[in-house]
Amino acid sequence: MSGQPTARRTVLKGAALAGTAGLGAAACSTESKVGHAAVPTPTAPVDLGDPEDVPVGGARLYREQRLVVSCPAQGSYKAYSAQCTHAGCVFDKVEGTEGHCPCHGSRFDVTTGQAVQGPATAALPEVPIRVKGGKLVAGPEK
Ligand code: FES
Image (tube, rainbow, N blue to C red; front, side, top):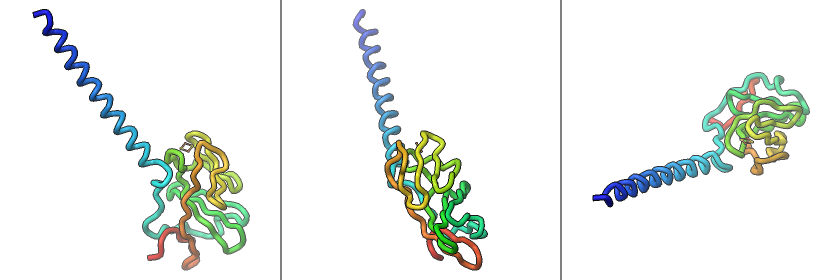
């Protein structure tokens, strides 16, 4: 009779361990989803409004659209995802041509997409951008 409670405890312990292992697996798959290559970019054209809003020689953050646009010379634009390649946070600001991630402090050169300060190491994905009908339009042509 005295062996029964022990056996029961063993079963419960086993179930608890199985639960923990399950959680671990879920956390890992979430991590890999927000990892480097999974940063989303627009799948349809995104209207960003007046091109003049982007300063020549500088950059502007479009936080809602998760994009950052730089203007190396009058009439010339480059766009990148404004979603950090470390764990997927969206930039909170752009200072000059440097995008800042509020989560763990990564910084990116938004004229090239390169990470200039970790923990992020992967570059931002480039997004096509053009001026159409007097407006800046990012994302694929439609
Ligand atoms: S998510 Fe940007 S630094 Fe971690």
